[in-house]
Image (cartoon, rainbow, N blue to C red; front, top):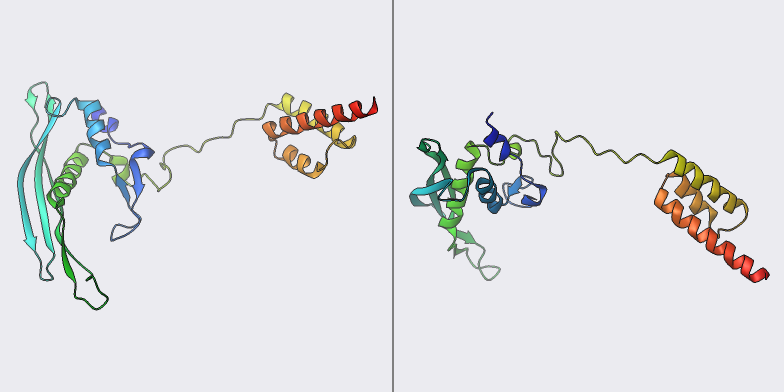
Length: 217
C-alpha cells in the first residue's frame, strides 16, 4: 500500500454523517469537500497536483417519469514523469423526481432537480478518488458509525493514588464530624474515585467548618 493511499484513507469524524433515510439508510455519508481538501494536502492544489475532467454526461428517462442523469470523469495525479494515467469514475443522480401531488388525491407530479448533473459529477469523483484510497477506511467497513474499529479504546486516566487516599481520609473525617448535609452523596463520589468531585466536597466541608467556628465566637 502506497504512502499516499494511507494518507487519504481515514476521514476525520467531522467529515462523516450517518445517512438517516432512503435506500442508503444506516450508511455513512462523507463530506465531498473533505475529499478535495485531503487531495490538496497530499497531492497539491487542484489543477496543479491533481485534476479531473468530465468526459461524458447523459440522462435516462424511466417509465414512471423519473429522469436519471449520469456523469463520467477521469482523475489525474501529478507524477515525476507528468500526469498519471486517467483514473475513471462513474456517478449518477436524478434530473426529475416523481413526488406526491399537492393535494391528497392528486397524481404524482414531476419535481426537477437543477443540481442533478452537479451531484452526479460529485458522485463520479467520489468513485474515482476511492480507487486511489480517498476514504478507504469507510469503504473497507472500518467505521462502525461512532468510531474506527482499529482504534484502541481510550483508557481513563489513572487516579493519583496518594492524592485519592489523602482526599478520602479528609472527607471521611468531615463526614464523621457531621460537616455534610448529604454524606451519602459524598460517599458516592469517593466510590467513583472522582477526584474533581472529592475536591469540591472538601471545599464545601471546609466552608461549613468555618461557618460553625464563626458561630461559636
